[in-house]
Length: 63
Image 1: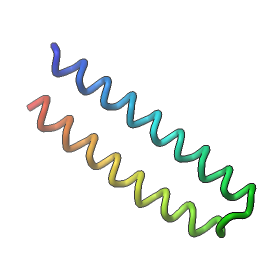
Image 2 (image 1 turned 45 degrees about the vertical axis):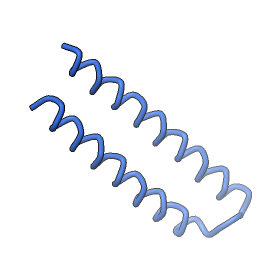
Image 3 (image 1 turned 30 degrees about the horizontal axis):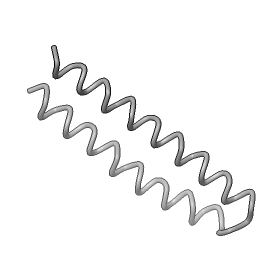
Image 4 (image 1 turned 180 degrees about the vertical axis):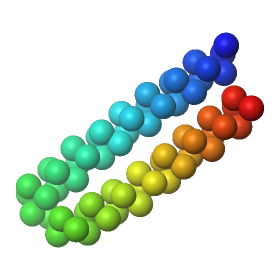
């Protein structure tokens, strides 16, 4: 049962990090710091690593 709570916590933290990333990207676009496509591409790369890490870790912990 502890493994399930570990995965739930991992997913919750990851969702919070991804939401914070969206907020950051939108703020940078609003302030015209960098071009929007560049920021969203960077966010997509980071988000892909986060999602992959969560899926891989969850698979290892729950198997």
